[in-house]
Length: 324
Image 1 (cartoon, rainbow, N blue to C red):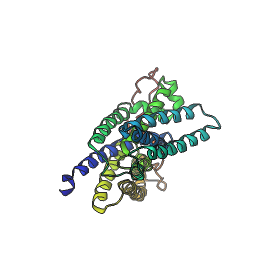
Image 2: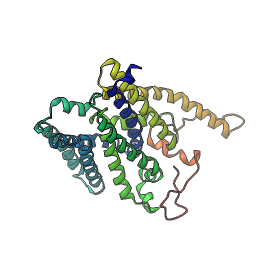
Image 3: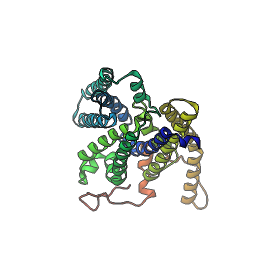
Image 4: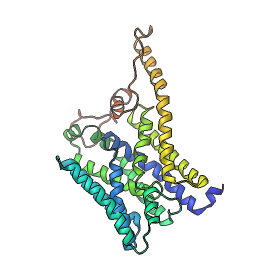
């Protein structure tokens, strides 16, 4: 295939696959914690790291990683300890990060508006071999955290107070989620762009929730959707000469609409099947709406009835089990 013979497309496709896996993998925890826009805020802060990389002639991926991790930790501390003025502090952090990035890129000897736009909205031709190595290392970290600690992260995302009672290190896990989200932003910024990466964290998860009923299935389907739209958007961008980030996000939103339309008849079918099991002689009442997808709450109530209950590692008491 012609598209696979171009070296820059080979690098872009590798980056797209890694982005498709990592963004929904951490995004599902942000959605459960009702922090869907956290990735957008980290993207604003990461731009300062990109500008710093240009100014110092270092790799923008690694400088953006360092700055965005610092910004994410600050956000988490403000969320944990902030009171009425916390929202103002977050706003200053976001706008300061964006302004600092624009200023530093313009001060850099090799900085330009073209460089700025490529990081804001993504660009296929700017993904270098060094970027692929950096993205691969960072993506491995994200997968290791989101899959290896899924039970602990799920417990903290569902109910912090209950997780704290069971003995889990809630503060450390919250900081780990923030750091992993920051790393994911820098993984995705080359292809999707800093202003659009938050959409790839949230939309595939929201789409998967429309047709799934358990956390594990939602996790897997969200990763499949993320990978599909990332690769599909990258290929479409190559053939139609359109921005890859915008194309990927619009494909994800289109898939969300399709799954939302399919969710209603699927929910009715499940409700009829559930009613038939409860009353073998046939339903005595009209079909009830099944709590399928759509919201995080819908997924929270299901695992206890669908899946076995497994103990969360680190829990102090045997009775403090959490379904994952």
